Image (cartoon, rainbow, N blue to C red; front, side, top):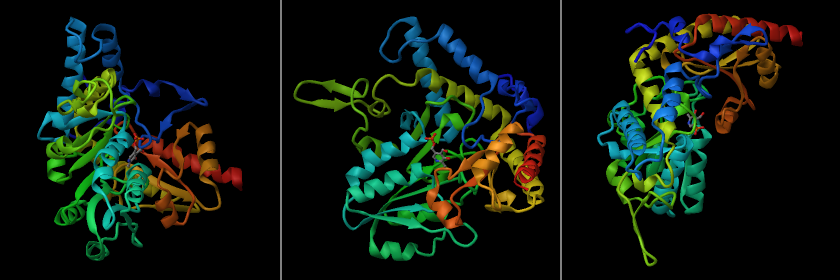
Length: 415
Ligand SMILES: Cc1ncc(COP(=O)(O)O)c(C=O)c1O
């Protein structure tokens, strides 16, 4: 694949040429796209490959014997193998295509948690988690009479594990869920102690890697998790495609999530039996071109190099913390640069984040303002919302300068 990049250290300026979105001005200014944690931009390689797929190889999959059906099936299944290798999963049939990370987590909630929780059991999440890795567990715990437990954050905004013994004493812990990278603070978690503890309790561990997979090497075997969720749109792939990886023995024992075509083995009036993995969890027509596009995005990320991407983001975060730290009245949230992916949340004293984001937009700077689907975290921080600038492999320091200059302009508006 032709990627405009050097092998070791990433050349973001050169990579930018792969992303057509940057070929425009926004409000007459160069685009500083600092909202990649929300959704990443797409390289021409992915856009062109998907267009070509639609133009030459599109048909429905698994059910046609004609040439196009075979090409489309090869495209989908080729992508599944790329995801397997990307996550270092042991078996390609453990890779389930879904719409996004949210659907992946809901699949586990409905097909595992809803059948395995009861009174006396506990589901454990953290205060740092995205609503997608919080609400499904809260709902399933309450619906099944189980306890919903949230590990709080300490004064350094790190997950406080000091209460684990008490939780284990009081409940049978069945499921522990946590993110690998926080979408609000960018914190890269060391999940090993929590995963170990979960397994000591006989619980399963669900890893939300929606923010991790775009930025760092994710290895389901090294993580020793039981389920892991990612979203294609955050990692240079199209929207409408996500992945649930799960341990084969768990997936095989689970009830299906969605019912209908494609997920069955046989159907009679009396009885329906389920198909083998992964089809049991892929009811209906698959997101065919989207899965294919995700495979191309994985090729792209691997050609650039996940290590190079991670190092680039650490550099950008260090630069951003320095530049933004000079802005009067700014509060910066989260850990030091070396402990986080390319995400910086902040507030300007006395100015609502939505006002900040709106004024920045006039300067060509796209950031996100809001609670970032992390209302429990916002409560911990004592704010209703934050501004969030997030970086990716195509982010250059000039965009951070544009952000910092924009913040001085915000101050002028409110002076
Ligand atoms: C950490 C984290 N988990 C889960 C999600 C949900 O991803 P999606 O909206 O693609 O389902 C997001 C999206 O922002 C996220 O940042």
